[in-house]
Amino acid sequence: MAKPHAGTPEPDPAIRVRALESILTEKGLIDPKALDALVETFETKIGPRNGAKVVAKAWVDAEYKKRLLADATAAIKELGFSGLQGEDMVVVENTPDVHNLIVCTLCSCYPWPTLGLPPVWYKAAPFRARAVSEPRSVMKEFGTELPETTEVRVWDTTAELRYLVLPERPPGTEKMTEEQLAALVTRDSMIGVTKAKAP
Amino acid sequence: MLLTPEIVPGLVATGASARVAHHVAPRFRVGDRVRVRNHNPDTHCRLPGYLRGKLGTVEQDYGVFAFPDTHAHNLGEKPQHVYSVRFTARELWGPSSPDRDTLRVDVWDDYMDLD
Amino acid sequence: MNGIHDLGGMHGLGPINPEQNEPVFHEDWEKRAFGLFAATFVFTGYTVDEFRHYIEKIPPAHYLEGSYYEHWLYSFEGALIKYGHITRDELDARIAQLQSGGH
Image 1 (cartoon, each protein chain N blue to C red):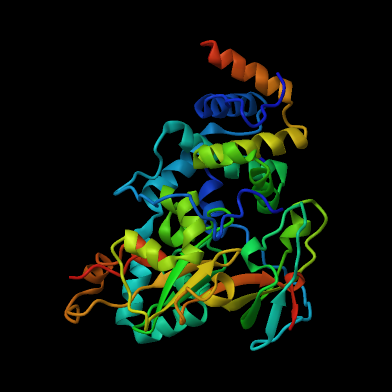
Image 2 (cartoon, rainbow over the protein chains, first blue to last red):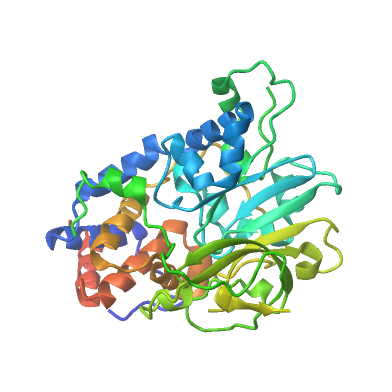
């Protein structure tokens, strides 16, 4: 069978994957149980709750926040999060003057250890095309509007640094515990399409 | 190497950084005004087209990393500095962009020149 | 390369339409595709850069219309064939077998 070219339909992806997995397993090149372990890790163990803990700690602990902004990889590792697609982290802080938004226009680079795997919209063409050229219109689709006096700063993840937004701490949260604060930190606020939730 | 379930947690927790432990002199310093090269290889490259020929400012030097243009084609790591470079939205997209908005893009030594 | 993947600034791609509360994986096959990344990475020795470049070379229409993990399949197939771990014929034969209801 000739290699499919543009215009011919590809075989069903489920069949393509089964073909790959079955051949590689028969050849002893992969262990399907390792695939199971990877899936379980990213379905149940690694997700945006990790990043929310980092943010909440930075909100309550000024010294931690300083360390986080100076060397994000080390500070995030203090909480036990590290590794694949987060080996070189940068945390960027939202303030009343600056709102940060993260994108990877060229593919789908995303900080896995703190946010888990990216949502479909982050990896799809519309967000990747528009986040760099019309970020405010993108954020409006998420219900976020910012005054023109705020600088919108878009980070295009072209290299192996991985970016995490430190959202502003919402007002009226002064008496909340770190755990309660973490519950306000949404994945979308750590990408930068929204602010953190109000209490 | 065969990936087994026992290896998975360690692999995930360690990952594989693209940093290269080489001393390489940086071509740029923080504050430099830089012009992105008109670089159009038909091979792998991590320079987005919208940056070509544009003027920016070096904001941060992240250190030394493998160079994707060569690394993707088994032509070696060619380690060099990666910088966070600031571009104004107006520089990239024209006068209808908000005046204050900016972009920060990670750019390798080989993708730009001093302006 | 100045390929279809270089999307920054492109017009006409429509709204973002974020899905609320989406699952980590939408289909079972996506889970297998995800797992194959690390599993093939460790024995082929190919780099993330090379992995990305196979995706960049996907025919543009397929790139835009295919779902995300389908992109990964092009990369796995390309690298595994290039590095001699499987052949195109082997893969096509297995695909044909599965399509006709084999297992």
